[in-house]
Amino acid sequence: MRTDKQRALLDGALRVFARDGYSRASIDVLAAEAGVSSRTIYNHYGDKAGLFRAVILDSSDRVAERQIAVADKLLGRIANLEADLVEFGLQWAKRDPETEPHWALVRQIQADFDHIAPETVAAWKERGPTRVRQALAGHLRRLAAEGHFELEDPSLAAVHLVQLTAGSAAAAEPGEDWETVIRSGVGVFLRAYAPGATSRS
Image 1: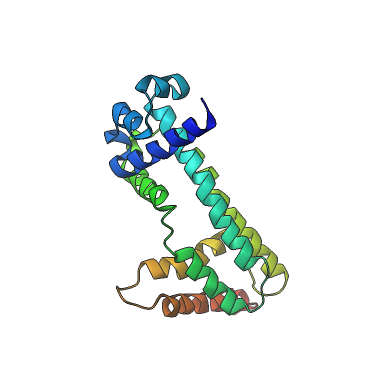
Image 2: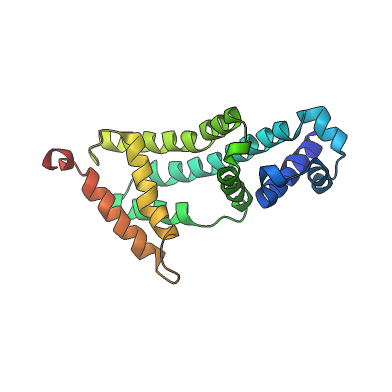
């Protein structure tokens, strides 16, 4: 399959799976959305499950690369720890129209979990959430070595950083100022992981 045709198929299938979910999406609708024949899908992906796996892995790779680029830019070189973490939270929480179909697909995975092959779910987690979490943990580990934090589990600290910043913004009331919410979350994170915080607790 030509590269442009494959790109159109993966992008079209992403839109359908994100909208309809795995169980409800039909091969005919998937083919029509991508402008290909159903035979093309069967020839190149075997069945709907094979196409779904290709779609979620492709989408996860692209979104993970974008997120890791944000982390590298904002955590790779720290000038002012609190301000840089606040900016990280703001950028992490920002809605990106280009990745919206991916997050809609992730929500569909959670709703369709019992109908998706476990190995596909495991591969998605490895290529997406786990990869990003490891990248964040690497930055926090480096910052801890520089004396900014005291960490026993950098991977868990990465989860806390995202939840206390972007996660707090996502849970904010309509009209609530995201920067204020994220700054508060950064304050909690800094107090929890400040040098000596573990021994004091």
